[in-house]
Length: 390
Image (cartoon, rainbow, N blue to C red; front, side, top):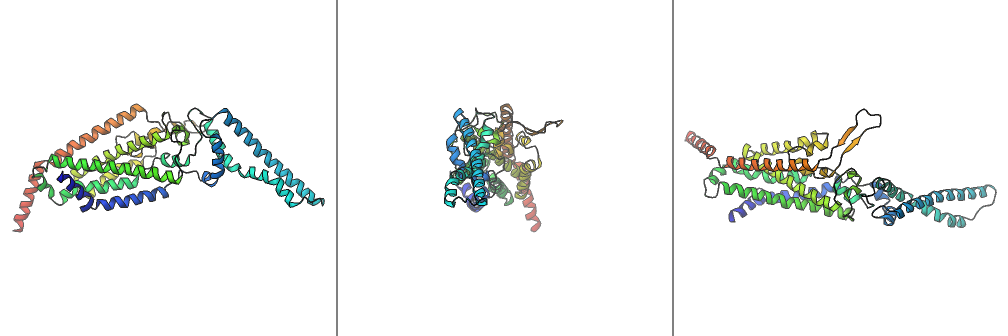
């Protein structure tokens, strides 16, 4: 236990891990504010009127809701016509010296103007109605900005990505670069036990940080927009319009958080494996970064990222919930595949394959770290250097 606590101190204090955690948490919060481009700005601008209409139709589409939309459309159209006629009569009166008192004009026009002022808010809810009526069984009326900001993107969490690199890369590399590996491996608990402690420590930190970052996201968007109606189907968001998954919005968030945690754990294994193989911090950072960022920025077909046996797909999360999306005009020879749904079978194969790869890397790096052949060579090299100096 004392050795494990020392490993924690080594990472958080001696390797300045605590400062990295604080800094990257601040960057995470800042990135949420800067990169929040999923919200409908028109909805925010006319939020009061939109929420007024949303309260009338919230939930599943019903016959009463459809009647409401027909009646409200007629009311707005009628108010426009009546207001136009009213002003036409007023200016005709000016022309023929039969001026209507302004107080009377204001009194007559006010109800029509109040009705028309709500038109933008009504148009927003009407657009949502047009989307929901295509498939009313799994699409509900709700305030979407919060859930869109939380779920409707496939953006790599760069603060978390770099935090894992900075925390985990030095765990083995520092031992090599300071030649401490020779001393550690010659001690009673410095072989397999040491490797397992470092792996457990890495897994513990990754789990806590992943859950913390998910909680930060949820809390931020809860206060920024609100995250009500989490029990509504995920298809209520247009981003998941073609999804075949039978899950709620809140369930999608929980699953996405779990997938990200799994991806981060596999990524931490990759970092440790590379660090044991290269024994250099810079090389470990470079290789680990390239393995994730190259397919992330290099692949234009986003769905391919989820089929690769890499942590990247799980680190993104939301794409596993999307359905098939095809774009193309009616006269196009071959429609363009925007996104191809990841089936449950494919998901299982990728997850199992990734687990097997991670376990293989753990076994190989453990074997390599406690390889006494390489230790003997290092000892001989140090002796030769000492002999040359003498």
